[in-house]
Image (cartoon, rainbow, N blue to C red; front, side):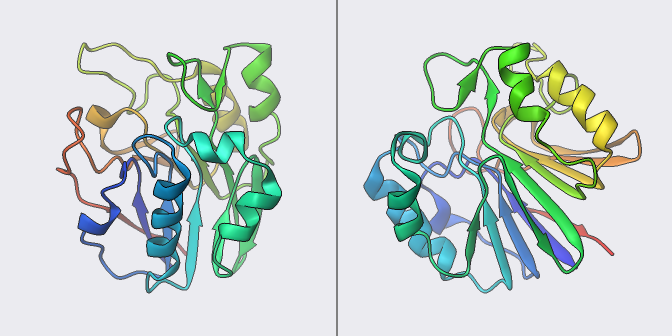
Length: 209
């Protein structure tokens, strides 16, 4: 199966050139300001993409997905789009889990304090997960800011080491875009924009058995 990973489109999704694939995964920050109209525009675009499977999570900019009821969100999501929020899905034998949570970052959406507060979310990740999607990266892996500070979550890294997925996809730290193999896991930061919110990075393609 060919996966295409993107993240941090921040309302510029229609300007992205996507390669062909079987599954597209968006790792959050669909919008710039988190408004309902921005979210609806993204969902219309995402729902019309030519992929068999379309999966997304929210990110720290996506206030609509944090503040509204699950019922209102569900009404807007196209029938062939999968939205994950501390939840999972099985696709052709691959178990996918997604979470929008990240360590506290200013006053944005889906913030949790490091330690017990955020661990309550990471501990929900099933140990048979094949593809893990979180908006924020783990500590020390594709998490360096422009000031060379490693801001990823160490609690997330510990859980990833235990779960041992084939792939972990994140975004959030725009300047840390890229791919890295470590601990036998393929780590991806799929942010398509740079620190100035300009599209500079290509979608990342992954082949999975």
